[in-house]
Amino acid sequence: MDILSKLSEYRKGVLALILLSFVFASMGLFARYLSTGFELFQQVYLRIFAAFILSFIFFRNDIDLRKLKKISKKEWWLIFFRVIAFYVFGVTLFTQAIILTKYSNVSFIGALSMVAIMGIFLMKEKLTAKKLALIIMAFLGVLLIAVSDYSNLFSWGKGELIALISTTTFALSYVARKWHSGLLNNKEITTLMLGLASILLFITSLFFGEGLPLGGWTGGLVVAIIGAGIFNIANLLLTNYGFQKVEAIFASNILSLESVFAIVLGFFFTKKFRSLVSLQEEESLPSVSLG
Image (cartoon, rainbow, N blue to C red; front, side, top):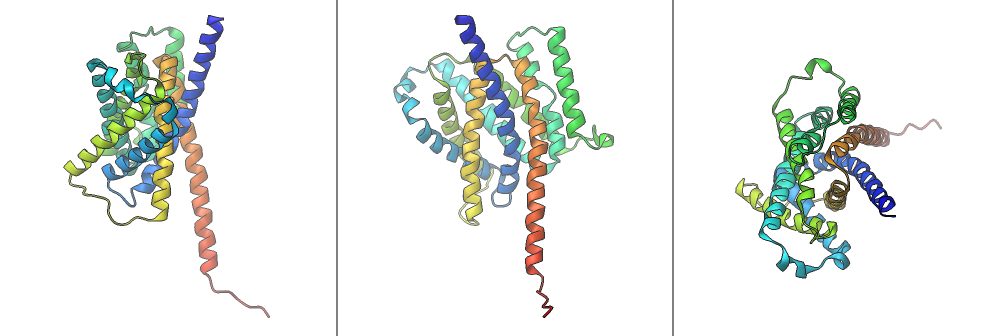
């Protein structure tokens, strides 16, 4: 019965990572849209703060605030480390990379199996011939799908370098999930990280002189922030659950699906946008009476 239970938990972890790939693929859409109304750190802390508020509302019955007094110094340091790696560097630099360069380039860099590398060196996971073959196949699959111009594959600019740093810090935060004690559940870890991240990002935004986002608000931006908040909750919760159940090497292969989802979403929304523009252009043309 224990074996069946563990297998079921493992499958749930795999499903969580597949969903995480889809959710993460969608984040680029929010990042580009919100960049039209906010500065870099502004848009990140606004959507993370929205995620924190919504997370506290959604998970209020699963959060025990009394545990805050029981968290050890080691656990607090781990939480702060993951927040800085995941949000201050990972999410922020990913957002900047999406704005600066092509999404295909970011997807290619994200397929460099940093999670697997961290799993081998930090988690001491065993690299077998089968696992190595899976890593190589996943990398080649993303290469074939995401890259259309191989002549510029190794012509890296600022955006590509930022994407590489982002991928590395994301991987560090991912694998560090296994270092948590059993005190906090995944929903508590998620809510706590979102709350700390929104504070740190707000301070960072002020430090870089971005100021407060007092003007330029539209209904679309508000909806986008709320939507991004919901997706950020899913992003972190699925990360915490998936990497709790699945070893990093296999998780790295599953996350390669992000590139496939990104291309599908990009094609869908680009097509919808073009259709909307065409419709608006037709409506703006003067009508011609044949009667």
